[in-house]
Length: 411
Image (cartoon, rainbow, N blue to C red):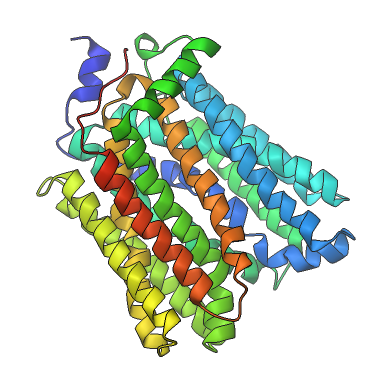
């Protein structure tokens, strides 16, 4: 067995001395997307006025970002398998910071849409390479534990980003939000340059050829087990998108919470994700990752069912909040285990496998927002039904697709 195969398959008995540094840097990279998507959402009404553009056109800035994330991950993942992790990662961070400046200086909605697509290409490199780096450094239980640790940093991103954006708008304009994103990108650029060494040795790299890359993606999609784990995580992520996009309208408009009360509920659910992630890290090794993933998916399906029943029968707020906490917190169990299990059998294609994981998450997640909006904001039923539907679909994907032993792709 070669040195690289040994490093990829041998379990890591205990955290490395640099685990905290890796957690902060890789967690920050993983938080790119939610911060970039959600922080500016509270500013959309002001942006429409400043740029003299209809709301529907401004919504395309979100669409452009999600498309850019999908395309960027599909390119950056295989590229990092070919040339190593650092070069495409540093290039992506430079592109992200530069395009964030351009977003802040945009004079029209059309320019902002174009610059958001560029920003997404840079962010995509951070997201996909962060997961691939974890696969380079860890395997088995150690990898799942590390993904659980990442929840400390990245798990709060989708929950707290709109809150942070709203608070920023109290002291600055929407352009200031993009300035903050620029500073975040620069901070990560410096952190990666100084604190994140190359994790993929030269002997473990593969030439980047279009035909080979397409065959790798086809092989991954044909692997029912990989697809099942990827869909389980992607569908749960979509449920989180639905929650983020609709919860303020439901909890404030339907149930009458004040902005401060909503912030407490929103933040409390974010803490629930982190706590579940840390619980998962303690349980991994005592229980198989697959069993923990199943527990998280069952909990999410039960929580989603409870949320839907509370909405349909117009039950009091506590009857909605209890299952909502269970549903949202279960993401802390589902995401680390689904990511670890999906990547486990593909150490030689970690970049490509990580890319597909990310694409499925954000493409499916991108469908959640318009689906919720179709039902209006005068009742909790649209949000509840979409969240419950995605949770049940995630459980079905896991139960029906991951029953076979995965077939590793050729090295």
